[in-house]
Length: 259
View 1: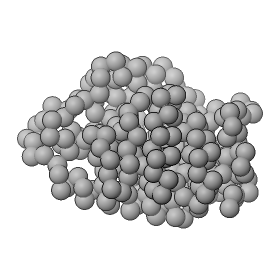
View 2: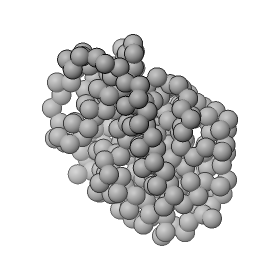
View 3: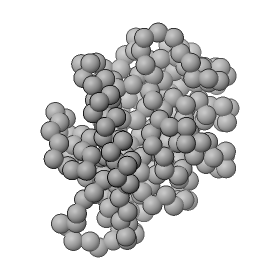
View 4: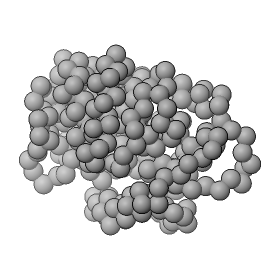
């Protein structure tokens, strides 16, 4: 059953704070939404840290065309959420996380028993929406999905179940990682393997940011992705360049403007 606007606001705010506390998300990455009806859903704003998300900056978006009113920009992945709500009428709550182990094991793009993997595409693009739509339509009986090199999608009929599934997903991904990770020397050369690493650091990890915890988490997650693969394949130089450029010129500035 869909949520009222007030219910959705409270649950999204609660979910954001809890995901940060459980370290399933960092800085402003990821997004959360709740269905309001067959026509609309409520979603987190773009570039706003989760401790600053409130009742006044959440955005109502139409499922049919992702239009919205007001000056606050909704998450750049709103079309991914809209596609899921369109396909799965049973889904009322969606978490898009960048949780550590789930993201790390997504890097090979291989289907997991616990989470089908959508092929890689740049965040916010039509291709990513198409890729997510394909796996959600193909595996209608699944509620946890991975986006290669990007993160996880957890869908459910309610907030409580979605959050529980996010925790279970991370546990299963951690067990998978430990069972198959390669024995590489600790000094392995770390290149960009994951989206958020490419966004923040580009081709080099020598970036200066104010959020030390996010830096630690993202570097650790990117390293796990490298160690998970027998023959590590970093992101293309073009994708890394675009991700870092967009982040520095647009997304990071948006975050700063919300301080």
